[in-house]
Amino acid sequence: MMNKRLVVGVLIGVVLVSLAAALVVNPVKESKRAQGDRIGLIYVEGVITGAREEAGLFSGTASGQSLMEQLKRAREDESIKAVLIRINSPGGSSAASQEVGEEVDKLRRSGKKVVASMGDVAASGGYWIAAKCDRIVADPATMTGSIGVIMDLQNLQELFDKIGITPETIKSGPYKDIGSINRPLTPAERAILQSMVDDIYSQFVDVVAKGRKMDRNKVLDLADGRVFTGKQAKSNGLIDELGNFYDAIDLTAKLAGIKGEPQVYELGPVSPLEKFLGGVSTLTRISNNTSGLQAQDIQQLIELLKSQQAGQMR
Image 1 (cartoon, rainbow, N blue to C red):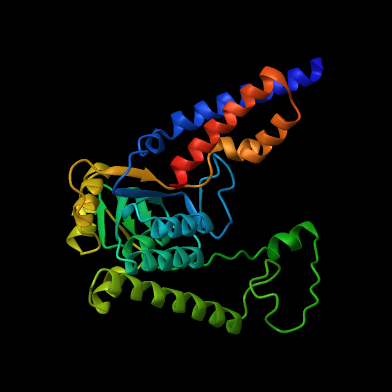
Image 2 (image 1 turned 90 degrees about the vertical axis):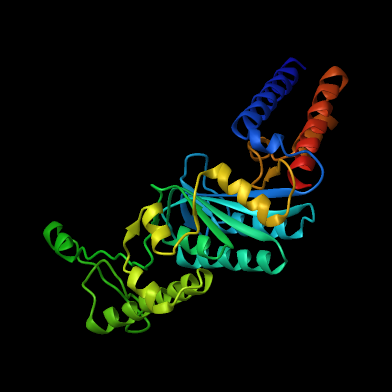
């Protein structure tokens, strides 16, 4: 009994600490419980990947799957009248950026305005997503652009020779080991990979030309991989306005026709509390196996968690 009480006590302590951390780390979510028209807020932070979810608190990645789910929720939530996407990303996976961009298209087709707010950097795939939005706001010093595609490969053949490693490859076709680190590319392989890079690059240019309503040749002049400051980007037509995060909120509210102080609701992945304990179901199982005041305490935590989920998903 003592061990059981100790375990439950530790779990309750963890829940309270986790809940407190969630509220401190994410104060914006707690300010969005008001009813009425709201602005949905989505963060794109770190390298954009095709992963199902962010690898961890300090992973520095933005999950394309998670971002798509957030955009879908924003599209289906009638109380959300517009969405602000806050971008701090150097880019990442072309396919993941493309998938997120397609969800931005669906959101706009549903009649909701979408604004991009650029922070420190919004380059490559980060800019791909921004170019899909109705408006783009950046700080004068924001690093943006880098319109282009890159593929990095390694040839370690000389290193293997020096240390006495002789790799052996058995393959079903001439290109099955294309990009192998065991040898240099053949001219045919280089041509294949270059054609892939050129194709994705062409798609990127088309996205910018269409999103920014720019002549394609003008985009090609800018799309050599270079980065621009926010001020330079505005001069070249790559963004609409200079301003900070709060300026972007005001613009989003204006585009959505929201009067007065806008209610900003942060969409996002599950809270740290849910990730740590597995959500309400885990607490319910603990409560069912406990009695007395301990069960009451846990039930109160369940109600707290439910109310947090309702506020997040409403």
